[in-house]
Each structure stands twice: as structure tokens, then as C-alpha cells.
Image (cartoon, rainbow, N blue to C red; front, side):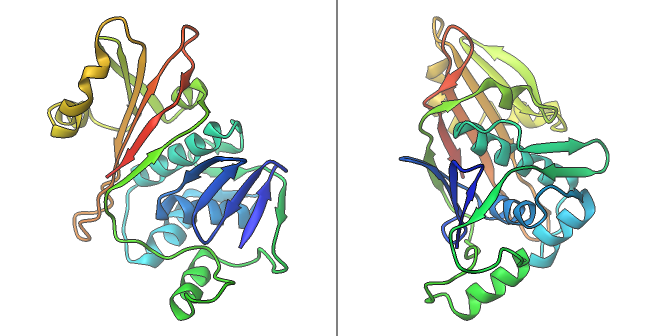
Length: 242
């Protein structure tokens, strides 16, 4: 199933892929379920608790509000890469409103829940009419982002500046404790890429993780490394979900 968002961006529910011409962004599974829920309730306020239940609870996970904030940030980032900056409105302490024009490219209604879509995938995944996507076991996924990533992503309410290392400015979500970033800066992943922070470079780095719960052991780490021009605008980002 596919739809067109704001008459520009095509969203492929089956492959969890947003595209604008040759530029494509693949969403993590939870982020794709979140977008499906927003599309289903386009223009309507959806509160935090029902979102958490629909996107995570019905799939056997028990996340915190941090998981929701992180996936909201990922979704905003994905749209910003394709030139759409203000599709998701935050209603403080309540929820969110997704505002966009939605046009289906399939002869089927969009009136279907994310949970129903998952059930249909499991029952008939060979069908050409699969709704939405298959739940994937978390693995290593490297996404090469093309086009521009606007700095507005790093200035939204959920993202905060942490520190400057050489030519790198490091950001994370606002509710992350300082110790989490300190630990990340000691990891092998950071040691492999820290050379991008040499003096004279302008680089924006965003890090977050998605620790859903201690019981299901499902963890995702998100890292985005973006060169910045003289105006502070990021471009040609390399994004890692691992």
C-alpha cells in the first residue's frame, strides 16, 4: 500500500519507505507504526498513552515515554530530509497532531489500524496487497541519507545540545541523562568515527538509543553524522541504526 503526503512524498507501507524522487528514507519498525497511526488519524490529536499502547503495547513491548519522544524525533528527521519540517505538532503534556494532505495510491481505504496491518502481513505475506510491513528483528542497518537535513530538527523541543568536541556539535534528546552520552563517547562506534571532529571541520552529530524495557532486551541505537556548511545547515548525513 502506498500514499502521497502533501502531494510530494510517497510512503510505501510495505517497505516502510518515504521517498521523494530518488531520495529515500527507510523507517525503523516502531517509527513506521507511529506514522501509520498518524496517517490514520490525520488532523486529529492523538494522546501519548493510546500511541504507546498501539505502537508498542500491542506488540508485546512496554516502553517509556522516552521511546515515544525518540521515535517522534526520528519521524521529524525523516520528513525534514525530504523537505517537510512542520507536519507533527506537539501538544504539551498531552499528545501530537499530524497535519498533511493524504492521497492513497491504492484502491483500498486507509482506515486500518497498525495492529490489523501486522496481522494481515503474518497471514498472507506473499500477497501483493500486504498492508504496512513485517516486524523485523533488530539488526544492523545503515542508512545513507541523501539531500539536505535542515537544522530545524536539532532545534525542536525534544532535542538539546550536549557539548562541542573539536569541530563536532553533539546533540541528543532532552530527557537523556548526561551519563548516557558520556558512555556513548567511550564506545567503539564513536572511536571509529571521531576523526570527523578534527579542527577546521563543521559537523553535527546526533545520538540516541531506544531502550524499550529490560524484559524484552530490544535496543536500538541511532547515530547521525552530518557535515555542516557555513550557515550551520547539515547535508549528506550518514545515519546508523544498530
